[in-house]
Image (cartoon, rainbow over all chains, first blue to last red; front, side, top):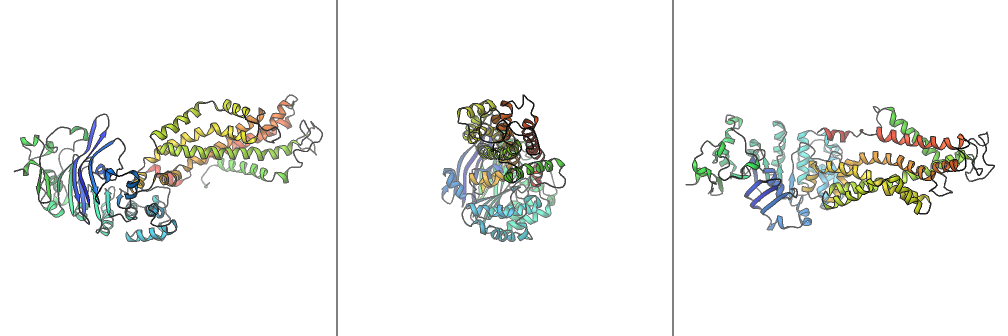
Length: 307
Length: 275
């Protein structure tokens, strides 16, 4: 459904910053893929670049094929028609993700109005229906409320409703659980389980969330995808040392903290494995670029599996 | 608009303005004479002529009441145009930061550095004296300040997350500018608009005082003009020159009280700045 081929994003600041480095990813129709990664690994930039929402200072190369057409070759008008109606976006609910001065009923229905699917008169009823799907509670009254009266979890559910309101087949979600406590995360999980039949590409750093939601998992580290696999394989037997460290850091697996930090973007123009400094399996050959090793659909970027 | 906690100031401003607006609306009922009827000139205040008569024998009190109409009309009308033009240019230039925004801001900056009173005088002097030309002259210079303020607010708003989300959901630029950014800058627009009325009234009074307005139009500024140039000030006929000065001052005070103190009530915007 969506094929990302060699997508790179560079930011032209005073020195080049490569936020996404030759990422290739296939999203199959009706599957949920989660991209896991630390803050600053380039996951959000990846999502935004698919919708061409990055500032002009970003230089994007590569291809994103969606329904047989390259998103990067489209005119502005065509992109606008695709956004919201074919490919949608669910942002994180913290902060001003909703316009603070407009009632939520209007905001939920707005994508349908701008894509001329309904008239303004139908908007309240359609937002009530949508919000009911996500159990907002008291929907008839809620649609006249302003966003500041909602809690974080409610806001996130409104955003999910807003994202799918124009019926997009592909949903890109950017850390939908950020800033929510665990019990609220479950509500968001419920929302996403409602959407099981859609195709979802979700960025998160919440491993539990990925475990519940995803069919496939991609691990991003320092602008590259280092592992891609089916969810069950990934959580039972991670291949990349970084993935393994991530899984070990989950509370139920002993909460073992990863040493060190992910390198900032401007430092890894060097060659060799980007996880080198923090890896406990490192050897001399890790100083040159690791190959992408494939086991069926499973992929891992590590020397350990090269032989 | 006004809640209980607000200080007295905006209420006072509102009261003053309502008084003058009522006077302007009911001018024919209130005023004892038609301001254009001519009786004996230079009469002192008396029971028949509350504030005496002017150099050609028109009742000054009636002139003053009818003057409220024209002064307020020019004030409101020019402020409306100034605010409309300034807001649209401000939002557009703030939203399109690139070449469009830079061109608009270039023009705005030029309009800002031109000394506005001399330009207004020159404009008013070259065009035929009429109230419409006064309005044009006022508008020609004063939209720039509004545009700049609205632009800087728009620059802030456009970086908020919800704008990017609107983009992501396929909402077009016009819709974003006028359905999403406009409500967020409306507060600033209203305050700027209120203050624009008072500054437009002041400019009108100044231009009329200099004799650049239509010679038959009755506004507070033109009463002052005749009081000054027909020896009213020289002979210290205070009943002639003081009332229009007091009226203009009170009106400006009213708008200032409303404009400067009437802000910060919008709970949702306050909420937004906190998060």
